[in-house]
Image (tube, rainbow, N blue to C red; front, side, top):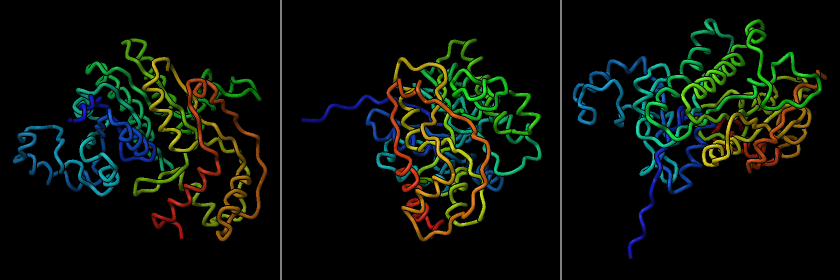
Length: 355
């Protein structure tokens, strides 16, 4: 007797090759009813554009006239090979080359999807010389392009990845009060301090909910804090670099800040929960752990005593306290910080970025 066919739901994950998105794709594939359409950016786009355009002239998959192509040459790069290696990916993952600033490519990616997870967003690696163009526009315009495409495609629900950065830079929030989803970072303060990432996440999320209110599109936002955990992608993301600095002994003295952090796998769980739970609405802080840097180092020393760690700590202000109570009431759970840190280090060792 033949097994009953599984009725599958097609969902789109933007920026599928990134740190958070890769784990989300893996999680979705663990559920037999999901087929994943992931958008990726060609890492060699500038160098390959002419070659690809020539290829498209004779491409039978897109008849040579496509602005956007879903054929293997569009997304067959080493940067995203880890996605194709996932269990179930052969049948249920399609990688599409798309650019957040190109509405046509985003609309093509979203068409026919029941749900969309908008994860892609720029994270500056250093001081930006043109923040409006390099950070803010991709975040804000990119998010609006995704939402417009979702509205046009009649997508059931959109879950966007925002950030606690859109919460804590709020001078009007009472001192000592735990930050909740009611707090929004002050855009003028972000701009004055040249905190472009904070500004980009705040503006993008505000624009997303404004668009949802105007159109009726169902939008839910997950707001992670510092995201750590094992790497899947071949590149090292910004938050992992912070932890690696401590493991490599780059500084003898560090500021003993409080970290608000979350495991990347728990972020993926939160995203899927927000998508699947009909009761989900609005924004959800995703930041279960608050820990001092000295305590992070202490845990790492216990697990891996041979690495060279910072020796001295400079005490600084207490910092922000975040509440994930709203997300936990939805049914979300999280891993112990020891598990997050240990699995992070093991993945760094396995990938060769740490001895």
